[in-house]
Amino acid sequence: MFRLRERLKQVQRPITVDEKRWGFSAKNGYRKETVGSGFLIFEIQSRLPGQLKSTWLETEERRMEDMVGDIFATMQAATPLLEAERLAEEDREARRREDEARRREEERQRKIADNRLRRFGQLADQWDRIGRMRAFLAEVKVLPYGPDAMVEGRRLADWIAWLEARIEARDPLRAGSRAIFEDLATVTEWWHQP
Image (cartoon, rainbow, N blue to C red):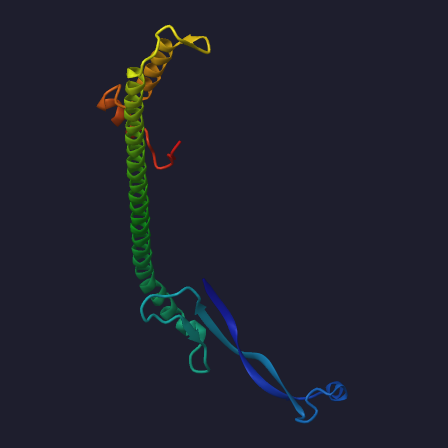
């Protein structure tokens, strides 16, 4: 962005009769004002790389039209430098985005691994419970009972068969190791324990 403006200067002027009446700077007898100097300032307001000049001040000896060549030469010198800086910044930003994506993916994989290990622990606990239930049922079966004895309209032999079927259905090993790993493969980073 460029800006061409008149250079300002501060001057003292005598206060007017009205200003005296209203008390403006009555002690000094003058008032400071900012007025145009009649000289121009040309500024390149964008940041320029290196030590490139960004401001040209017009003076009595050197007029703005005499500085146009210097201004254009500076702009020509700045263009490839600014382009190189822009490309370097885009490259830094692309690397930052790649690093961030890599970090997010590593975090996602860590969560998946943690959740899969938790699920494997659940399956191990379930297998342990099933083993305890089988052992307990085996002990119950050796106790003396009449096979025709009834509880809630069912024979004890039916109760035992019902328990055996339920225990077997909940055994995580019943379908083999492939089923366990297929179960683990369904676990994602958003999985939570049921």
